[in-house]
Length: 406
Image 1: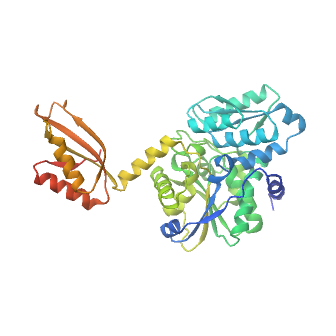
Image 2 (image 1 turned 90 degrees about the horizontal axis):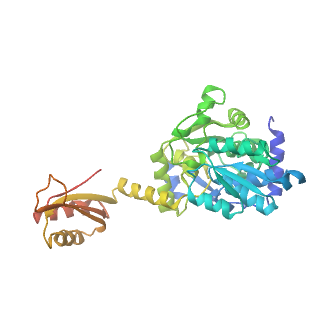
Image 3 (image 1 turned 90 degrees about the vertical axis):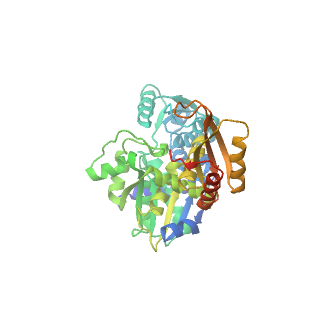
């Protein structure tokens, strides 16, 4: 096979990484199996050391450095997960590491990278800006640049995930893998296709960062602009030359998912599966859940590539989903601006069996009479009937409130 030499590296990496990485389990999900009408298994790389698969490729690549290269140290560029993988592996191997990260990288990932022992330099607004600066550092010093995806040793380290999938589920039929630069899907594809060439492997990108998909359509590596996505871990302007070639040869295709599909899958992972995954790590499963990849009646694996989500982002995403599902609602109405008026409203709310999350009162709106005030309530509700009952009770008591969608 064309990629025999990388496959041999993958087999070697399995031994080299034995004491550095976790063998993450496959978790059968009845919830997502029902959503997708197939047999869905989750490869839990969000539970990997440093919180993502990246430690595999970083550790194996550094294990292949010469003694002089190890002594000089390494430099890398990353939006977060490769940074932590390099920092952790370098510290384990006694190697100095410098990581260049975009200035808008999640604070949690920056702090974690420093915590693993790396020097962090913040530069540029995208991964590609950070990459250019890291290459400049490598060109002007003796340190070795460690590419996050366009490197055969890195690809080989990531490929150990493919071996683990086959060990647990040898009759797997379809695998969905998040794609940024393409190192993860390339390694998995080589590992799987060498043993089971009929397995269908799909790369999955965020729709607004679909550089690999666009490159495959163009027949050459092309870049995309904007990268307006919450999936920061796969927000890459263009794939690597090596990963593009492997994807062209071995993948059934690369598909993309919408932002709302990602957030809904992330929400269901939290609520139903009790699993924390970052947005970039959910795209493969989102493609299965929302029918972008057909897994009806098939045994399928979604690789959950990382769990390093910023807590403030997770809070916002959960809040939005609760509103979308109608489990949180916002109601507005006008009340008399006098003592006791708000209490009357809250008595009805309590009687209706809903919970108040937030209250705000506006007396300054010039369109509201001087003796009145606008009251806005954010409510947690068990179902729509409870909201309808509450609004009806309020009307019966002379208080007109309505659901506010904005």
